[in-house]
Image 1: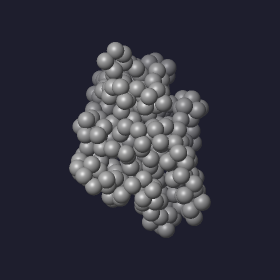
Image 2 (image 1 turned 60 degrees about the horizontal axis):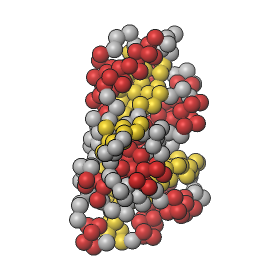
Image 3 (image 1 turned 30 degrees about the horizontal axis):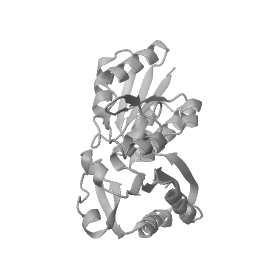
Length: 282
């Protein structure tokens, strides 16, 4: 009889309630300030981060191989036969590699490490679907074979007030670094199939950026039913405006206005992020 554990990192932004209800193990990033380091989303909330950012931009540290190995060992001791680890994109973090090395080092529990090739609730949507499949009694083989097709059904789009934090953190990807400052243009950013940031569109001003996010969603809904999550990175009012503008669109079967993105993500985007995740149900 298979007993399957589900593990993710704190960048997946899955709600604490869902994590507890489904016994999901979350390995946190570290947020490192000059005088102290914090466990992501446990010891440091997003609200605390955005208060501290004007004084100091911290660095982040990925979950270590040892952390993943310790967790896998403890799960094996609890009687788990299999584990599925879903990580933030390998194009944005070394977390996937840490988890993979841990899986290779721990015997006695069959482990599948899956690179989400994305982040925040795009990654989180995969965690949620996987938890539901485990609950339904699907086999380890069925779930691990399904995950790549699930990844292809989920996209993320977001806009930020400034590219300064992405540039500082070295996470700029294929997003042009000059457009926001020279022309007051705001990029709508997506994560490509290569797992790094790309510019999906360029708009001028906040209102236009929210309107463009709504426009980018419509082609998905024209093809069939979708689930949607609205992202907030220190911009709750903008997130509410986006949510109100899309929640009644035809073919949205579930529209969630979530909490703030994890501090480990907020460090690299700064305050002012608003965006959406779309999961195709067709």
